[in-house]
Picture (cartoon, helix red, strand yellow):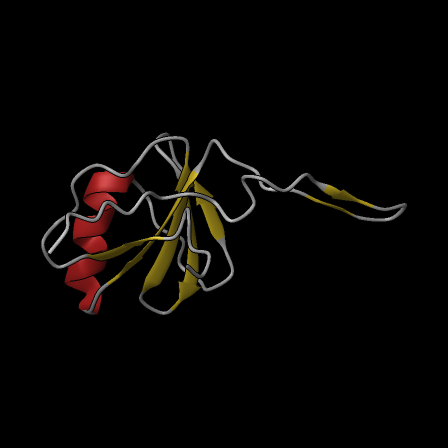
Length: 103
C-alpha cells in the first residue's frame, strides 16, 4: 500500500475574496477556535483552572488573558484566541474548529 500524506489546505486557498456593494466574503486566519465540552461542575472547575473564568450563561462571552470563552450550550464552550489551548484536563473533550470546513 503506498504511503499517503494528506495535506491540510483551505478550500478557499486559491479563491480570491468575493466583494459586492454590500458584502465581502473572505477567509480570515490568525486565530484558533476550539470547542470544549464535558459533564458536570467538576469539568467546568478543571477547565476554569486552565483557561480562566467561564461565562455563567449561554450566549455570554468572557475575555480572559489567554483566550475569549463563549458558553454555547450548558456544558459546551468555544475558546477563541491567537494560540492553541494548553493541555486540558482529561475530562475535557476538545475539538479544533479553526479549520472546520467540510473536506
